[in-house]
Amino acid sequence: MSATIVGWGMAVPDQIWTNAHLESMVDTTDAWILSRTGIRQRRIAADGDTTFSLGHAAANRALARARLSAADVDMVIVATLTPETPMPATANLIQDAIGARSAGAFDLNAACAGFTYGLEIGRALIDAGTAQTVLLIGSETMSRVVDWTDRSTCVLFGDGAGAVVLQGSASGGIRGNSLGSDGSGAPLLHIPAGGSKQPASMDTVRDRLHLLSMNGRAVYKFAVKATVRAAAVAMARAGWQPTDLDLFIPHQANLRIIDAVANELRLPEERVIVNADVYGNTSSASIPIALCEALDQGRVSPGDRLVLVGFGAGLSWAAVAVEWTAPVDSTPSEVGAAVDRQSAPARRAP
Ligand code: UT7
Image (tube, rainbow, N blue to C red; front, side):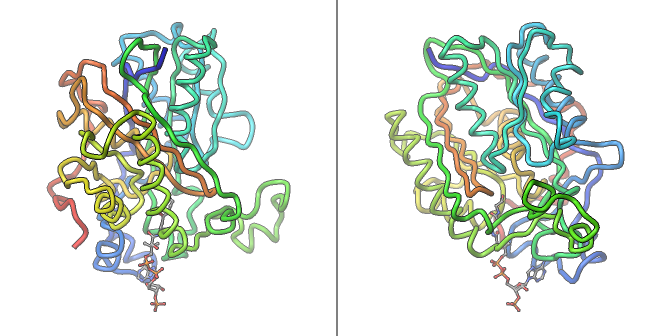
């Protein structure tokens, strides 16, 4: 028994911050951001938007698409590094809000690899008979942990959520995986304070230690290597060659990373999903949002072979090979999703 995706949905905040907007906040330029990352704009949570509210909206859309009710859900998993509160888990809040009375719920923190980690965990729960229906959500409000005075990181991130519903499948679905960690790289991308090592204090707040800090160059090098390796292992476990792949859905951190990976795997542009240009890096939400957009654009059909790969803080990575099984209709994954492709038409970083 494997597991397959039977429903999907996404939710992003209405508020759009362009690179020009960031020029008014920190010492940066649209040209720098575009050439180094390919990002043109990102969605930013308004006061009322939270990791819970975005994740809840995405979860409801995924359940509606799956034509299932909350009563059918056995497990709610929320992949996030920006939970609603440190305790309880955001998954508990979403489980309650959707009315999934007989479901278990927990959060999973594998940073930007959280959603793909969650796909494999959901598959394993279904394979073990622990759950029949798993609701997996990747939801982030990165704008709440980004240091808006640090130009080297604040231009990269955005907010949003994506969700999928997993159920058992006799054929197709999740066919291969590769999950990994290299904790020696923990200091390369972290939020230093707010945990047991440095609990919140006046000093930690003053020193901005509750905010994200990153060694961009080191993470870049890791990202390319880890993504290529994880994708190759997941494909090998599925019995596929890169030439068998119909669609590659990488974590949307940086177009240069995506292009370097696609080049190494010899994947043509039309088989690689890119939407970092309009959403920036939404961490664990980036892959489900990209999946929803690919489905909405008619780029996925039953029988297609997909590889999804996440990488990030930990350092962590996770790749999953999926043979798509669900029928795809024309209902959008987000009602009224206003993806501003007219002002952001280019796929590639110049
Ligand atoms: O999902 C989490 C995983 N995270 C990632 O995947 C991020 C991986 N890393 C990256 O994507 C890239 O390293 C960055 C986009 C973060 C940075 O690009 P880079 O080509 O590695 O630039 P850099 O850090 O080497 O900085 C080059 C220059 C520096 O100036 P000097 O020292 O050469 O004078 C920076 O101070 O660019 C400067 N710089 C900026 N300039 C204008 C850094 N940030 C900015 C900025 N605007 N926003």
